[in-house]
Image (tube, rainbow, N blue to C red):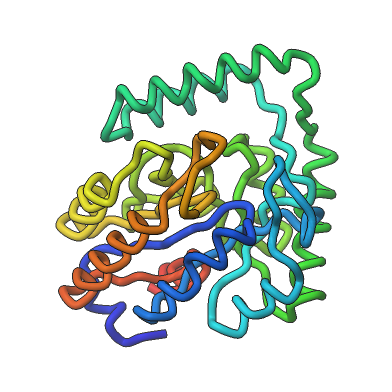
Length: 277
């Protein structure tokens, strides 16, 4: 761990959901240029296969990430969201709405989610808590056995979680879990199994993300930024697309801010530091 962490003014974790091959090919050279380590969240069932029509990285691709010092976190095995009670979803909506810096964009996302899930109806697959137990266990084992690393970070598929899921993860060797609740993590007051995030979508620009970083830097907060598909073109109007150019601009920006005390590190490394404080 770098000694600078003890003098850090704000923290940033770059978190990549789904481990799409295209994303890794585009972000890896940029991250390497600035010596930035990130967290890649892997749905283990889809290694070398397609998830939602997009190619997921192969075993060799992931091994190269590990060799370069990046963290591999569990994004479950089958990438199926947990079934939660309506009151948990309402609470999640309120938390995210209050934490959103762009409330109109947040409401647009919610509207699209409602339309999509309504169209899917009973076909939308969710898992119960017993299946969740097996999902997190299996993915952790595959990551550790295949890549020779300790898998201690989890990312909830679809961001859906409840208190029971948190208890299971805490007893299964995980030290943290990331949700899709919008916001920042306050050092000393955060729940390590319900980490908040700012998620890039196709409307997010580097200028938007600069505001997130500046807030974390000025207030000493932990900002987790979530990316999905980072590519050159968004041919299918994918909701969670980030252009390579916007990503490059953003990495250049946070690299400059890191010289002013901003610490950029994977989820696991930040949690390890917090546990030692």
